[in-house]
Structure formats: structure tokens, C-alpha cells
Image (cartoon, rainbow, N blue to C red; front, top):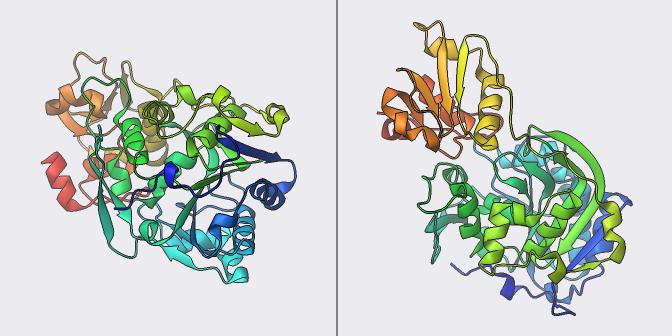
Length: 416
């Protein structure tokens, strides 16, 4: 695989420091145009440019879940004016059809108006790309378009994330992974000698070879709290642009009221030299960008989870497992007893601090592995909701939040 690396970015730097452009308070279209036109875009002339939005879910415009269509409209117009051939591509979460998502989000109508191709990046076979020196993963399955286009532009939504802290331009490239392989990053075992969650290390591993040439971070309407899809929409009206995705994400973190050093996949990637996150080593334009800081509500550290006839054994769990369990119970709590008909109470364990659990316990997440012989064990850090539902039902399941469908072959492999 031809690596997509920051060092290959053709966008000219006028400074030794990475430059981040921040625009605000003029709406998504004009904010995006204003940020992009500050850059030298001559390198895109005659090139094939792939726009990679956050369009992995079926959600209405303005929900804070997916990229605003007017940001995409501005990117198409600006890059075409600079002489590029432009297309839009996505590999959504499992269970979601790409074109349905594009249509619901409003991107399809924007593309039709401009005769811009829309690409289902799952429609073709993937390329298996090795990750030299990967710690949590040693390869990824990459959609072909990533190699076929000259430039890949990451256009995520500015969101908090219950599993990874934030999801911005670096993590948005996870949507270039083919089909269900995206979910595999949630199913990794703990990495020996590391305190970080394996998904955070895996995203950093991925970014060693899969980084965008340019990042356009859509803060028109962000999401705070339990992102990426269960949080609260936050009107913000900000756009962040940079040729260094780590610098773009770092400044976005500051605008959101957090810091890149507290986001493991950004900290790890920066320590490895994949990009810059140190605020003092980034040139931000304009100088008064701090005026637009508006802290996002973070994912909750602790959730009070109470459901009738369900006992939660929560000892030293992290917010990721808590959030996943809460969402699972909100969606499926009334169905659990269909699968445990002989039990008047169901016991669910999360966290690494449970010294013992009763027989028949539903053990969720890698930290409960010591008790996997006591009941049903669902691996992951954390496992997605569909994996939990599949484990207790024995049937393939799709969840509206994570969109993952679990096949019978994997059921047998994990739970036989």
C-alpha cells in the first residue's frame, strides 16, 4: 500500500510550524471557504481529490452526528475552482447503506446539484495494508479509493466520543477501513505493558500509514456528552483546517475545552512523530482564535445504571464500558429476559475490580475475562452493543448505534 503520510502532503507550508486556520460565525459554507482560501491550493490542480466526511450513520442535518452538507458543498466548490476533480466517499458503520446515509444527511442533494460522484467505498474489495511497528494491530483493510485518489481530505464533525474522548480528523480515517473491519478495533485484547485502551493504541497504529493530506473539521454543529451519536447537539459555527491532522485535532480539542495530551490516540501518535499536538509548536490563524473556545460537555466519568431486576456489578470500570452498557440497556433492557427466561434477575459485570461474580453472569469487556467461565463473556474494549445482543441471543444482530452485524460463524468462534 502506498502510505498516506503527512510528509507527502503537497500543501505548502509558509512556516516551519504547522498552520491551523480557524474561521467562525459566518455559517458552514462561508466559514469553510474562508479557511480554505487562506491556503495555497495550487497543488490540487489536475489532481483527483476524495472528500471523506463523517457520513457513516443515517441522521438528519443539524443533529451533530454527521458532517454538515454545506461544508461539503464549500469543499467541492473550492477544490474544483482550484482545478481538482472531486468525489465524496464513505464506508459507513455496518447495517447502514452508504447511499441511504448520503441521502439522509443532505450530501446526496449537494452532490447532485454539482454533478459530484458519490462513492460507496465498501462496494469493492479491500487492500490489506501492513503496519510496520504496529503495537495493537499489524495490518488494516483499506478501501481501494484511498489509494486511487491523489489526495484524501478528512472532513469530520467536532464531537466528544464515549470510547476515545474525541473523534476528529485522525479518527475519522477509520471510516476508510473496509466494512466490518472497523469494529475489529473494538475487539482487541489488552496490550501487555500498556495502560491505554487497545482501541486508542490501534487508532494511533492506523494513523502511522493512514493520515489525510488535509483536514477540514466541521464544528458547525458539534456533539457533546456521549458522542459519537448519543450525545447532545451543540451549535458552534466553527471550522478548523490544517495540512497536519494532529495539529488540527489539537486546536479543535482546545476549542472544545479539552487537550490533545488527554486524548490517548492523539498523544500516542504525536509522541511517535506522526503530527504536532503541542500548542506552542502550532501557528494558529487568526491570533484571537481563543475567543471562540466553548467547552463541550465531556462523556460522563460515572453513570448511575439502574434497571428493574438487573444487578450491575461495576468495580473499577471505565466510562467507555459504562456508556456502552447504559446505551445497551436503554435499547434492549426490556428484551434481556427473553434470553434468560428462567432467571428472575440478571447479573451483569463490568470493570476489572470484581473479585468474584455469580454463576450465569453476563461479563462485558476485556476486564471481566477472569470470570468468563462463570457465564457469558463478551470481549472488547468495550464491545459494541450488537456484540452483546448477539452473545445473549445467539442470532446475528444490528444495532442502530454501532451498526455492526455479527455473523453466526463469529458467534461460534467467540462463545462456543
